[in-house]
Length: 312
Image (cartoon, rainbow, N blue to C red; front, side, top):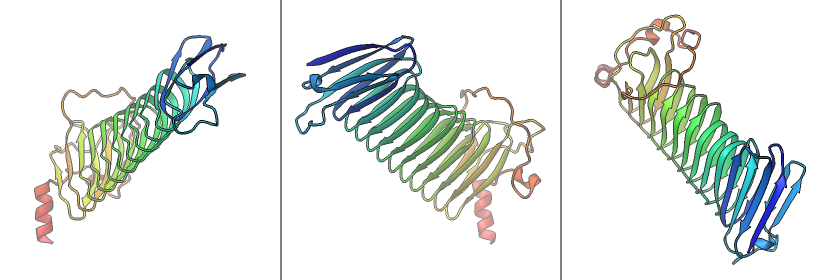
């Protein structure tokens, strides 16, 4: 069984797709048509509607157990929006899309590029290549973002969160999932319970990180001035960063606010070979701390922290 429809759509369309089981594939390209193909045991019972700039694909209301798996393939013009509701069906979005809204259960999601993406997922894996604005929630499924250039908010229960590059700003939360960022040149705010937080390199901006028992590992570009507010109630604090001093006028710097209850905190020079995203230098601002001179003093090493604790 199959359905094949082609509509003339000279501009971006608003696509809606409902699918419980199977696979949704949407491909955006430079074209003036929208094509819809549905295959599966009950494909002929699906409805395909085209009204104005909207296209909707949905299964019949009478579907139940044994309805079977179906594949929905849609080709749309570049910049189209997608709204998909899927149970265990997987979602594969290719090309340049505009606004994307996804609600899924256990199905995995792959999105190559979107201007604005919102998702809610239960246990499926979320993979996004490039996104400007992001808002997402996941239960136990992992989230992997290639590049975030605008504002992003991501929360998981136990699923891990990994971003390759953060050029914009990120607010990430997890109960027990690991949070990892490969390269950050924007403002970062992370909250975690027992999961670890790791940032391979921070080029500039503010990082506000808090965990209960999850360890924190940060890499800072070598030679970059750092303003640090770092503490742990019962964990250790270790730094191998060399003293640099205050930043000069117009010079980038890193502002750290890192606090844990029982977890260790480590600050080290970033690994060699990582590339910075080209961004203009931010205007020089004095740190928000009460003592500007002390703010850029060398961060205590683990040995210094332990000696201080013995003296008290």
